[in-house]
Image (cartoon, rainbow, N blue to C red):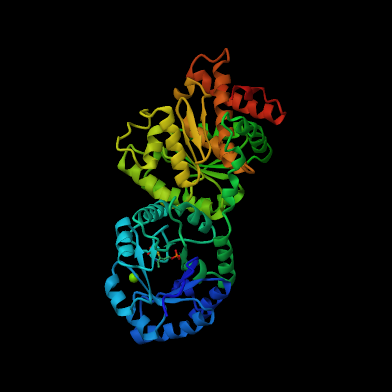
Length: 515
Ligand code: 3NM
Ligand code: MG
Protein backbone atom coordinates (compact mmCIF):
# COMPACT_ATOMS: atom_id res chain seq x y z
CA UNK A 1 0.00 0.00 0.00
CA UNK A 2 2.71 2.46 0.95
CA UNK A 3 2.47 5.81 2.57
CA UNK A 4 -0.01 8.35 1.22
CA UNK A 5 1.40 11.46 -0.40
CA UNK A 6 0.65 14.24 2.01
CA UNK A 7 -0.02 17.89 1.30
CA UNK A 8 1.06 19.77 4.43
CA UNK A 9 0.14 23.22 3.20
CA UNK A 10 -2.75 23.95 5.56
CA UNK A 11 -2.65 21.71 8.58
CA UNK A 12 -5.56 21.85 11.04
CA UNK A 13 -4.94 20.87 14.66
CA UNK A 14 -8.26 20.46 16.47
CA UNK A 15 -9.10 21.75 19.92
CA UNK A 16 -12.38 20.93 21.58
CA UNK A 17 -11.88 23.03 24.72
CA UNK A 18 -14.76 25.47 25.25
CA UNK A 19 -12.44 28.48 24.96
CA UNK A 20 -11.78 27.57 21.30
CA UNK A 21 -14.70 25.47 20.13
CA UNK A 22 -17.41 27.20 22.13
CA UNK A 23 -20.64 25.25 22.01
CA UNK A 24 -20.20 24.12 18.43
CA UNK A 25 -19.86 20.56 17.22
CA UNK A 26 -16.25 19.49 16.67
CA UNK A 27 -16.98 17.51 13.53
CA UNK A 28 -19.02 20.29 11.98
CA UNK A 29 -16.17 22.73 12.43
CA UNK A 30 -13.71 20.21 10.99
CA UNK A 31 -15.97 19.57 8.00
CA UNK A 32 -16.30 23.30 7.38
CA UNK A 33 -12.51 23.59 7.43
CA UNK A 34 -12.22 20.72 4.97
CA UNK A 35 -14.65 22.48 2.65
CA UNK A 36 -12.48 25.55 3.01
CA UNK A 37 -9.33 23.74 1.98
CA UNK A 38 -7.55 22.20 4.97
CA UNK A 39 -5.11 19.59 3.63
CA UNK A 40 -4.47 17.47 6.75
CA UNK A 41 -6.17 17.14 10.14
CA UNK A 42 -4.79 16.24 13.55
CA UNK A 43 -7.23 15.26 16.28
CA UNK A 44 -5.77 16.70 19.46
CA UNK A 45 -7.60 15.69 22.63
CA UNK A 46 -5.67 16.29 25.80
CA UNK A 47 -8.44 15.02 28.10
CA UNK A 48 -10.95 12.20 28.03
CA UNK A 49 -11.19 8.46 28.40
CA UNK A 50 -9.65 6.26 25.76
CA UNK A 51 -13.00 4.93 24.56
CA UNK A 52 -14.29 8.46 24.22
CA UNK A 53 -11.29 9.59 22.16
CA UNK A 54 -11.56 6.53 19.94
CA UNK A 55 -15.22 7.32 19.33
CA UNK A 56 -14.34 10.92 18.44
CA UNK A 57 -11.59 9.71 16.11
CA UNK A 58 -13.94 7.32 14.34
CA UNK A 59 -16.49 10.03 13.81
CA UNK A 60 -13.88 12.44 12.54
CA UNK A 61 -12.45 9.82 10.24
CA UNK A 62 -15.77 9.59 8.40
CA UNK A 63 -15.44 13.26 7.62
CA UNK A 64 -11.75 13.29 6.67
CA UNK A 65 -12.24 10.22 4.43
CA UNK A 66 -15.05 11.99 2.63
CA UNK A 67 -12.61 14.79 1.71
CA UNK A 68 -9.74 12.38 1.14
CA UNK A 69 -7.58 14.16 3.68
CA UNK A 70 -5.30 12.33 6.14
CA UNK A 71 -6.25 12.14 9.81
CA UNK A 72 -3.52 11.96 12.46
CA UNK A 73 -3.95 11.53 16.21
CA UNK A 74 -2.03 13.64 18.70
CA UNK A 75 0.07 11.59 21.14
CA UNK A 76 -2.15 8.51 21.16
CA UNK A 77 -0.63 5.72 19.14
CA UNK A 78 -3.21 3.35 20.64
CA UNK A 79 -6.07 5.45 19.27
CA UNK A 80 -4.46 5.61 15.83
CA UNK A 81 -4.12 1.83 15.84
CA UNK A 82 -7.68 1.36 17.03
CA UNK A 83 -9.20 3.43 14.23
CA UNK A 84 -6.54 2.66 11.61
CA UNK A 85 -6.15 6.28 10.55
CA UNK A 86 -3.19 7.67 8.64
CA UNK A 87 -0.87 8.26 11.59
CA UNK A 88 0.11 10.16 14.72
CA UNK A 89 1.76 13.33 15.86
CA UNK A 90 4.05 13.03 18.85
CA UNK A 91 5.69 15.62 21.06
CA UNK A 92 9.01 15.48 22.85
CA UNK A 93 7.33 14.22 26.02
CA UNK A 94 5.37 11.49 24.27
CA UNK A 95 6.32 8.02 23.16
CA UNK A 96 9.76 7.58 21.52
CA UNK A 97 9.64 7.85 17.74
CA UNK A 98 11.22 4.40 17.33
CA UNK A 99 8.62 2.81 19.60
CA UNK A 100 5.80 4.51 17.72
CA UNK A 101 7.26 3.31 14.44
CA UNK A 102 7.51 -0.24 15.68
CA UNK A 103 3.89 -0.18 16.76
CA UNK A 104 2.51 1.57 13.68
CA UNK A 105 4.70 0.10 10.98
CA UNK A 106 6.36 1.77 8.00
CA UNK A 107 3.23 2.92 6.21
CA UNK A 108 1.82 5.25 8.86
CA UNK A 109 2.67 8.92 9.05
CA UNK A 110 4.53 9.97 12.18
CA UNK A 111 5.09 13.66 12.82
CA UNK A 112 7.26 15.01 15.61
CA UNK A 113 7.17 18.35 17.43
CA UNK A 114 10.60 19.99 17.56
CA UNK A 115 11.78 23.33 18.85
CA UNK A 116 15.55 23.01 18.60
CA UNK A 117 18.06 22.00 15.93
CA UNK A 118 19.07 18.98 18.02
CA UNK A 119 15.51 17.70 18.35
CA UNK A 120 14.95 18.25 14.63
CA UNK A 121 18.07 16.36 13.58
CA UNK A 122 17.18 13.51 15.90
CA UNK A 123 13.63 13.30 14.53
CA UNK A 124 14.87 13.34 10.92
CA UNK A 125 17.44 10.68 11.66
CA UNK A 126 14.81 8.60 13.39
CA UNK A 127 12.66 8.62 10.28
CA UNK A 128 9.96 11.14 11.16
CA UNK A 129 7.65 11.75 8.21
CA UNK A 130 7.40 15.43 8.96
CA UNK A 131 8.35 17.97 11.62
CA UNK A 132 6.03 20.34 13.48
CA UNK A 133 8.35 23.22 14.34
CA UNK A 134 7.36 25.62 17.09
CA UNK A 135 6.40 27.54 18.99
CA UNK A 136 6.64 30.35 16.46
CA UNK A 137 4.67 33.01 18.32
CA UNK A 138 3.25 33.05 21.79
CA UNK A 139 -0.30 31.73 21.65
CA UNK A 140 -3.17 31.51 24.07
CA UNK A 141 -4.00 28.08 22.69
CA UNK A 142 -0.98 26.42 24.25
CA UNK A 143 0.69 28.14 27.13
CA UNK A 144 2.97 25.37 28.35
CA UNK A 145 5.15 25.57 25.28
CA UNK A 146 8.87 25.15 25.77
CA UNK A 147 10.16 28.04 23.80
CA UNK A 148 9.05 30.83 21.54
CA UNK A 149 11.51 30.52 18.68
CA UNK A 150 10.13 33.01 16.19
CA UNK A 151 10.62 32.74 12.47
CA UNK A 152 14.39 33.01 12.96
CA UNK A 153 14.34 29.85 15.07
CA UNK A 154 12.29 27.98 12.46
CA UNK A 155 14.59 29.13 9.69
CA UNK A 156 17.68 27.98 11.58
CA UNK A 157 16.17 24.52 12.10
CA UNK A 158 15.29 24.25 8.39
CA UNK A 159 18.75 25.38 7.37
CA UNK A 160 20.49 22.87 9.62
CA UNK A 161 18.42 19.83 8.70
CA UNK A 162 18.88 20.62 5.01
CA UNK A 163 22.63 20.96 5.56
CA UNK A 164 22.60 17.56 7.22
CA UNK A 165 21.02 16.16 4.05
CA UNK A 166 17.44 15.67 5.22
CA UNK A 167 14.50 16.60 3.07
CA UNK A 168 11.89 15.89 5.74
CA UNK A 169 8.75 18.01 5.20
CA UNK A 170 8.09 20.61 7.87
CA UNK A 171 5.28 22.81 9.09
CA UNK A 172 5.43 25.41 11.81
CA UNK A 173 2.93 26.07 14.58
CA UNK A 174 2.02 28.66 17.19
CA UNK A 175 0.14 31.88 16.69
CA UNK A 176 -0.25 31.58 12.92
CA UNK A 177 -3.26 33.43 11.52
CA UNK A 178 -4.36 35.25 8.39
CA UNK A 179 -2.41 38.37 9.28
CA UNK A 180 0.96 36.67 9.54
CA UNK A 181 0.68 33.47 7.49
CA UNK A 182 2.43 34.83 4.40
CA UNK A 183 5.12 36.55 6.42
CA UNK A 184 5.75 33.39 8.37
CA UNK A 185 6.16 31.27 5.24
CA UNK A 186 8.36 33.94 3.74
CA UNK A 187 10.50 34.65 6.77
CA UNK A 188 10.94 31.02 7.76
CA UNK A 189 12.38 30.06 4.39
CA UNK A 190 16.05 29.10 4.66
CA UNK A 191 18.20 29.38 1.53
CA UNK A 192 18.22 25.59 1.21
CA UNK A 193 14.78 24.62 2.53
CA UNK A 194 11.29 26.07 2.77
CA UNK A 195 8.34 25.21 4.96
CA UNK A 196 5.77 22.86 3.46
CA UNK A 197 2.93 24.49 5.32
CA UNK A 198 1.56 25.92 8.53
CA UNK A 199 -0.32 24.25 11.36
CA UNK A 200 -3.19 26.18 12.86
CA UNK A 201 -5.58 25.79 15.77
CA UNK A 202 -7.48 28.90 16.78
CA UNK A 203 -7.45 30.85 13.51
CA UNK A 204 -9.67 28.07 12.15
CA UNK A 205 -11.26 26.34 15.14
CA UNK A 206 -12.25 29.56 16.89
CA UNK A 207 -13.24 31.45 13.73
CA UNK A 208 -16.83 32.67 13.51
CA UNK A 209 -17.02 31.12 10.04
CA UNK A 210 -14.43 28.31 9.88
CA UNK A 211 -15.03 27.60 6.20
CA UNK A 212 -14.51 31.19 5.15
CA UNK A 213 -11.53 31.57 7.46
CA UNK A 214 -9.95 28.45 5.97
CA UNK A 215 -10.62 29.61 2.41
CA UNK A 216 -8.83 32.84 3.19
CA UNK A 217 -5.91 31.05 4.82
CA UNK A 218 -5.68 28.61 1.91
CA UNK A 219 -5.57 31.46 -0.58
CA UNK A 220 -2.91 33.24 1.44
CA UNK A 221 -0.84 30.07 1.63
CA UNK A 222 -0.81 29.92 -2.16
CA UNK A 223 -0.11 33.50 -3.18
CA UNK A 224 3.12 35.46 -2.82
CA UNK A 225 3.01 37.90 0.09
CA UNK A 226 1.96 41.38 -0.95
CA UNK A 227 4.94 42.98 0.71
CA UNK A 228 7.43 41.08 -1.43
CA UNK A 229 6.07 42.90 -4.44
CA UNK A 230 7.40 45.93 -2.68
CA UNK A 231 10.99 45.29 -3.63
CA UNK A 232 11.28 46.60 -7.14
CA UNK A 233 13.86 44.42 -8.78
CA UNK A 234 14.34 46.92 -11.54
CA UNK A 235 16.36 48.95 -9.06
CA UNK A 236 18.68 46.07 -8.32
CA UNK A 237 21.21 47.36 -10.83
CA UNK A 238 21.06 50.86 -9.39
CA UNK A 239 24.78 50.94 -8.65
CA UNK A 240 25.13 54.72 -8.46
CA UNK A 241 21.90 55.13 -6.51
CA UNK A 242 20.37 57.50 -9.11
CA UNK A 243 17.16 55.52 -9.37
CA UNK A 244 16.59 55.36 -5.63
CA UNK A 245 17.42 59.07 -5.20
CA UNK A 246 14.82 59.87 -7.84
CA UNK A 247 12.20 58.23 -5.64
CA UNK A 248 12.98 60.45 -2.63
CA UNK A 249 10.91 63.42 -3.74
CA UNK A 250 7.70 61.43 -4.33
CA UNK A 251 8.06 59.83 -0.90
CA UNK A 252 8.50 63.18 0.85
CA UNK A 253 5.67 64.73 -1.10
CA UNK A 254 3.39 61.92 -0.14
CA UNK A 255 4.14 62.39 3.55
CA UNK A 256 3.34 66.06 3.07
CA UNK A 257 0.04 65.23 1.37
CA UNK A 258 -1.16 62.43 3.65
CA UNK A 259 0.13 63.39 7.13
CA UNK A 260 0.63 59.78 8.29
CA UNK A 261 0.49 58.89 11.96
CA UNK A 262 3.88 58.18 13.52
CA UNK A 263 3.23 56.18 16.65
CA UNK A 264 6.31 56.29 18.85
CA UNK A 265 7.04 53.98 21.73
CA UNK A 266 10.27 55.67 22.51
CA UNK A 267 12.64 56.54 25.28
CA UNK A 268 12.40 59.24 27.90
CA UNK A 269 15.14 61.39 26.39
CA UNK A 270 13.72 61.99 22.93
CA UNK A 271 9.93 62.18 23.29
CA UNK A 272 9.71 65.88 22.61
CA UNK A 273 12.40 66.02 19.94
CA UNK A 274 10.94 63.04 18.08
CA UNK A 275 7.48 64.61 18.08
CA UNK A 276 8.93 67.82 16.64
CA UNK A 277 10.83 65.93 13.95
CA UNK A 278 7.61 64.11 13.02
CA UNK A 279 5.80 67.42 12.64
CA UNK A 280 8.65 68.93 10.63
CA UNK A 281 8.65 66.09 8.10
CA UNK A 282 4.88 66.31 7.78
CA UNK A 283 3.73 63.43 9.96
CA UNK A 284 1.33 63.41 12.84
CA UNK A 285 3.10 62.18 15.98
CA UNK A 286 1.71 60.35 18.94
CA UNK A 287 3.94 59.31 21.78
CA UNK A 288 2.07 56.36 23.28
CA UNK A 289 3.90 53.69 25.22
CA UNK A 290 0.94 51.69 26.46
CA UNK A 291 0.61 48.50 24.45
CA UNK A 292 -3.17 48.14 24.70
CA UNK A 293 -3.65 51.40 22.85
CA UNK A 294 -1.96 50.04 19.76
CA UNK A 295 -5.05 47.99 18.86
CA UNK A 296 -6.81 51.28 18.07
CA UNK A 297 -3.83 53.29 16.86
CA UNK A 298 -2.75 50.68 14.32
CA UNK A 299 -6.03 51.22 12.45
CA UNK A 300 -5.18 54.82 11.60
CA UNK A 301 -2.94 54.09 8.65
CA UNK A 302 0.35 55.02 10.26
CA UNK A 303 3.48 53.22 11.36
CA UNK A 304 4.92 52.22 14.72
CA UNK A 305 8.39 52.99 16.05
CA UNK A 306 9.65 50.68 18.78
CA UNK A 307 12.65 52.38 20.30
CA UNK A 308 13.90 50.42 23.27
CA UNK A 309 16.08 53.20 24.65
CA UNK A 310 14.45 53.12 28.10
CA UNK A 311 13.34 49.50 28.10
CA UNK A 312 12.14 47.79 31.27
CA UNK A 313 10.13 44.58 31.63
CA UNK A 314 6.73 46.28 31.49
CA UNK A 315 7.88 48.37 28.51
CA UNK A 316 8.92 45.19 26.75
CA UNK A 317 5.47 43.66 27.27
CA UNK A 318 4.00 46.84 25.80
CA UNK A 319 6.27 46.66 22.74
CA UNK A 320 5.24 43.08 22.07
CA UNK A 321 1.54 43.94 22.34
CA UNK A 322 1.89 46.86 19.99
CA UNK A 323 4.02 44.91 17.53
CA UNK A 324 1.38 42.20 17.33
CA UNK A 325 -1.37 44.75 16.82
CA UNK A 326 0.50 46.44 13.96
CA UNK A 327 1.39 43.10 12.38
CA UNK A 328 -2.22 42.02 12.63
CA UNK A 329 -3.32 45.18 10.86
CA UNK A 330 -0.54 44.86 8.28
CA UNK A 331 0.90 48.28 9.21
CA UNK A 332 4.65 48.85 9.22
CA UNK A 333 6.95 48.74 12.23
CA UNK A 334 10.37 50.35 12.67
CA UNK A 335 12.58 48.79 15.33
CA UNK A 336 15.39 50.74 16.95
CA UNK A 337 17.27 48.33 19.23
CA UNK A 338 18.93 51.08 21.27
CA UNK A 339 21.81 49.77 23.34
CA UNK A 340 20.97 46.26 22.18
CA UNK A 341 24.12 44.58 23.42
CA UNK A 342 24.61 46.63 26.57
CA UNK A 343 22.73 44.54 29.13
CA UNK A 344 21.18 41.11 29.38
CA UNK A 345 17.71 42.69 29.62
CA UNK A 346 18.32 44.43 26.30
CA UNK A 347 19.61 41.29 24.63
CA UNK A 348 16.52 39.49 25.89
CA UNK A 349 14.31 42.33 24.65
CA UNK A 350 15.78 42.05 21.15
CA UNK A 351 15.10 38.32 21.17
CA UNK A 352 11.54 38.76 22.39
CA UNK A 353 10.70 41.48 19.92
CA UNK A 354 12.19 39.59 16.99
CA UNK A 355 10.40 36.38 17.98
CA UNK A 356 7.02 38.01 18.32
CA UNK A 357 6.48 39.71 15.04
CA UNK A 358 7.65 41.12 11.78
CA UNK A 359 9.76 44.28 11.70
CA UNK A 360 9.68 46.19 8.43
CA UNK A 361 12.78 48.21 9.25
CA UNK A 362 15.56 47.62 11.76
CA UNK A 363 17.85 50.59 12.34
CA UNK A 364 20.78 50.89 14.67
CA UNK A 365 24.45 51.66 14.99
CA UNK A 366 27.10 49.08 14.28
CA UNK A 367 27.05 47.51 17.74
CA UNK A 368 23.27 47.29 17.79
CA UNK A 369 23.03 45.77 14.34
CA UNK A 370 25.72 43.25 15.26
CA UNK A 371 23.74 42.27 18.34
CA UNK A 372 20.56 41.91 16.33
CA UNK A 373 22.43 39.74 13.86
CA UNK A 374 23.52 37.69 16.83
CA UNK A 375 27.23 37.55 16.36
CA UNK A 376 28.37 40.18 18.79
CA UNK A 377 30.31 38.87 21.74
CA UNK A 378 31.56 42.28 22.73
CA UNK A 379 29.56 44.15 25.32
CA UNK A 380 28.53 47.61 24.21
CA UNK A 381 29.37 50.60 26.34
CA UNK A 382 26.19 52.57 26.98
CA UNK A 383 24.47 53.32 23.75
CA UNK A 384 27.41 54.98 22.02
CA UNK A 385 28.66 53.26 18.95
CA UNK A 386 32.09 51.84 18.53
CA UNK A 387 33.27 50.67 15.16
CA UNK A 388 35.29 47.63 14.25
CA UNK A 389 34.05 46.81 10.76
CA UNK A 390 35.27 48.31 7.52
CA UNK A 391 32.87 49.57 4.86
CA UNK A 392 32.56 46.35 2.93
CA UNK A 393 31.97 44.36 6.12
CA UNK A 394 29.25 46.79 7.17
CA UNK A 395 27.58 46.52 3.77
CA UNK A 396 27.73 42.75 4.01
CA UNK A 397 26.26 42.71 7.53
CA UNK A 398 23.23 44.87 6.67
CA UNK A 399 22.65 42.93 3.47
CA UNK A 400 22.77 39.58 5.26
CA UNK A 401 20.55 40.71 8.10
CA UNK A 402 18.01 42.22 5.69
CA UNK A 403 18.06 39.10 3.58
CA UNK A 404 17.57 36.93 6.65
CA UNK A 405 14.74 39.04 8.05
CA UNK A 406 13.23 39.84 4.64
CA UNK A 407 13.09 43.51 5.55
CA UNK A 408 15.13 46.71 5.39
CA UNK A 409 18.15 47.16 7.64
CA UNK A 410 19.89 50.48 8.24
CA UNK A 411 23.21 50.78 10.03
CA UNK A 412 23.87 54.40 10.93
CA UNK A 413 27.30 55.93 11.26
CA UNK A 414 29.43 58.51 9.49
CA UNK A 415 28.47 56.56 6.40
CA UNK A 416 25.08 54.87 6.64
CA UNK A 417 24.52 51.47 5.11
CA UNK A 418 21.02 50.44 4.14
CA UNK A 419 19.84 47.28 2.41
CA UNK A 420 16.80 45.21 1.61
CA UNK A 421 18.90 42.12 1.13
CA UNK A 422 19.19 42.70 -2.61
CA UNK A 423 20.13 46.35 -3.01
CA UNK A 424 22.59 47.94 -0.61
CA UNK A 425 23.39 51.63 -0.50
CA UNK A 426 26.04 53.64 1.35
CA UNK A 427 24.94 57.17 2.21
CA UNK A 428 27.52 59.80 3.08
CA UNK A 429 25.27 62.71 3.93
CA UNK A 430 24.91 64.20 7.40
CA UNK A 431 26.91 66.41 9.74
CA UNK A 432 28.96 65.81 12.87
CA UNK A 433 26.54 67.95 14.91
CA UNK A 434 24.06 65.08 14.59
CA UNK A 435 26.41 63.10 16.78
CA UNK A 436 26.66 65.84 19.39
CA UNK A 437 22.96 66.12 20.11
CA UNK A 438 21.08 63.40 21.90
CA UNK A 439 18.30 61.58 20.11
CA UNK A 440 19.16 62.27 16.49
CA UNK A 441 19.46 58.57 15.77
CA UNK A 442 16.14 57.92 17.50
CA UNK A 443 14.35 60.68 15.64
CA UNK A 444 15.63 59.34 12.34
CA UNK A 445 13.54 56.29 13.23
CA UNK A 446 10.54 58.59 13.52
CA UNK A 447 11.26 60.16 10.12
CA UNK A 448 11.56 56.67 8.63
CA UNK A 449 8.22 55.64 10.12
CA UNK A 450 6.53 58.54 8.36
CA UNK A 451 8.13 57.52 5.06
CA UNK A 452 7.19 53.86 5.22
CA UNK A 453 3.71 54.62 6.52
CA UNK A 454 2.95 56.69 3.45
CA UNK A 455 5.00 54.79 0.90
CA UNK A 456 3.21 53.42 -2.10
CA UNK A 457 5.64 50.91 -3.41
CA UNK A 458 9.29 50.48 -2.62
CA UNK A 459 10.07 50.13 1.07
CA UNK A 460 13.82 50.57 0.68
CA UNK A 461 13.32 53.73 -1.37
CA UNK A 462 11.09 55.13 1.38
CA UNK A 463 13.79 54.51 3.98
CA UNK A 464 16.45 56.08 1.76
CA UNK A 465 14.19 59.12 1.22
CA UNK A 466 13.88 59.62 4.97
CA UNK A 467 17.63 59.34 5.48
CA UNK A 468 18.40 61.85 2.72
CA UNK A 469 15.78 64.27 3.99
CA UNK A 470 17.13 64.02 7.52
CA UNK A 471 20.84 64.18 6.78
CA UNK A 472 20.75 66.85 4.12
CA UNK A 473 18.66 68.96 6.51
CA UNK A 474 21.48 68.54 9.02
CA UNK A 475 24.05 69.72 6.46
CA UNK A 476 22.01 72.76 5.52
CA UNK A 477 21.39 73.63 9.17
CA UNK A 478 25.05 73.33 10.13
CA UNK A 479 26.01 75.71 7.32
CA UNK A 480 23.71 78.47 8.54
CA UNK A 481 25.59 81.49 9.87
CA UNK A 482 23.68 81.58 13.12
CA UNK A 483 24.54 77.97 13.95
CA UNK A 484 27.63 77.91 16.15
CA UNK A 485 27.36 74.48 17.77
CA UNK A 486 24.99 71.69 18.76
CA UNK A 487 22.70 74.00 20.74
CA UNK A 488 21.89 76.40 17.92
CA UNK A 489 21.94 73.46 15.51
CA UNK A 490 18.76 71.82 16.86
CA UNK A 491 16.24 74.55 15.97
CA UNK A 492 17.95 75.15 12.63
CA UNK A 493 17.73 71.44 11.90
CA UNK A 494 13.98 71.39 12.57
CA UNK A 495 13.63 74.40 10.26
CA UNK A 496 15.55 72.70 7.47
CA UNK A 497 13.51 69.51 7.78
CA UNK A 498 10.43 71.64 7.37
CA UNK A 499 11.89 73.77 4.54
CA UNK A 500 13.04 70.75 2.56
CA UNK A 501 9.54 69.30 2.79
CA UNK A 502 7.98 72.58 1.67
CA UNK A 503 10.45 72.91 -1.21
CA UNK A 504 9.85 69.30 -2.28
CA UNK A 505 6.10 69.86 -2.24
CA UNK A 506 6.70 72.76 -4.68
CA UNK A 507 8.93 70.47 -6.73
CA UNK A 508 12.02 72.51 -5.88
CA UNK A 509 14.59 69.76 -5.54
CA UNK A 510 17.81 71.78 -5.28
CA UNK A 511 18.57 70.21 -1.88
CA UNK A 512 18.60 66.76 -3.43
CA UNK A 513 21.71 67.64 -5.45
CA UNK A 514 23.64 66.89 -2.25
CA UNK A 515 22.58 63.25 -2.24
N1 3NM B 1 1.55 23.04 19.56
P1 3NM B 1 -2.74 28.45 17.53
S1 3NM B 1 1.75 25.55 19.72
C1 3NM B 1 -0.86 22.58 19.50
O1 3NM B 1 4.61 24.75 19.84
C2 3NM B 1 0.28 23.51 19.55
O2 3NM B 1 4.30 22.65 19.60
C3 3NM B 1 2.44 24.00 19.67
O3 3NM B 1 -2.36 27.15 18.38
C4 3NM B 1 3.90 23.80 19.71
O4 3NM B 1 -2.70 28.07 16.09
C5 3NM B 1 0.20 24.87 19.61
O5 3NM B 1 -4.13 28.76 18.01
C6 3NM B 1 -1.02 25.70 19.59
O6 3NM B 1 -1.76 29.51 17.92
C7 3NM B 1 -1.13 26.52 18.33
MG1 MG C 1 2.10 15.79 22.72
